[in-house]
Amino acid sequence: MGRSNPPLRKQRQIFLWASGLSTAGSFAGLTAKGWVLMNGTSNPLVLALHFALLSLPTLLVSGPAGVVTDRHGCEKVLVWAQWGLLAGGSLGAIAIPISSGLNQALLLLLSTLVVGIASAYELTARNKYCSLLVDSPQELGAYLTSFSVVFNVGKLVGPPIGGWLVAFTGPSLALLLDASSYLLPIATVVWLLHPRRDQEKRSGHAMGTSLGAAWRGCGIPLRQALGFTALFCLVGFFHPGLAPYMAFKLVGASPQDLGLFTSILAAGSISGGLVLQRHSLWLSQRPGLLLGSCGLVTALGQLGLAIGGQPLWSLAMAFAIGAGTAVLLSGANLICQVGAPPQLRGRMAGLAQIAFLGGGGLSGLLAAGITMEWGLSWCCALLGTIGLGLAMAELWRHGKQKLVLAD
Image (cartoon, rainbow, N blue to C red; front, side, top):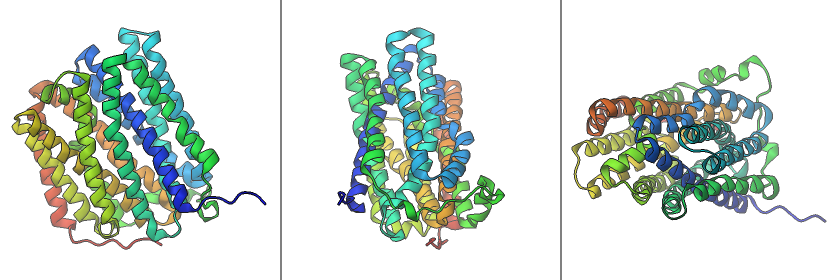
């Protein structure tokens, strides 16, 4: 007789650890890229463009990614996307030794664009794939939030690794680590995991399986949650793109300072993710309260940065921003997954990506323009004030709304 498959609980742990280790390598590479671009240009617009190329492809790609996932199966799309991530990471790894100056910057930006396109497919497929690794629908929310915590642990340890590698060996090794880290989830999905493929519900190829049909069919509460997420991210999710510039202005100019600043953001993300994980069922039923509270914490953190002060104060505000934005993003994704029917979950993951990553990419460009014109403090003050108003309005209008979870 053949060897029996490991239980789903064990498979969930394997998938979490593989993804977390891959995330650590990816953020080491992103830190290295950000420092190279910052050191070479000192231009916040270039840094914002770097993040925009990572996030804005979601506006064009996440919709088709959700449709493809629902039609062809999440496991197949997940593996395709991971090979695309490997290709993008490899391009970044070879850019340093084979180029310099403007050509090097263009190759690094092209690498980020490839990773951004592949990431849109990977995240969309991964969200639906998670539902095949749980024994019952009631476990999905807790697993998705556990995934978010492990992801943010990778964000915590990756930037210091990237900063130290840049400082002591140069950026090439950090970018090589980024590229090689994608091999682990590929091997895990192909050879180690055996999800409940018979439980997956696909949508077919009819006209009613489009992204627009998912938007119309998901219900008013989910549309409201997605709308608020997109609008708030437009003014409140600019820190990933400007992190190297913010670290330079608020903490210091060394690669280690960038790693510290990014790690503090990630530490806030982990703390917020643990709170969401512990109360995932209760909070997922209250989308207005969850998302409005996250927006409030984020906006107050931005206003705190606008006040200015010692590096410790700036790091404390970065912690708050990390917590608020991480729970906003994972909370929006959680609400879309547990509140939508199974046959819509691929497309709902795509819509959630469009809301937070698309809005975040535009936010980085907007914040870069304001920063170049008036300075970082005025940027944080203006966008923080707008975000505060949006969050208070969401809590006032939808804070008591309850969501009926899908089976």
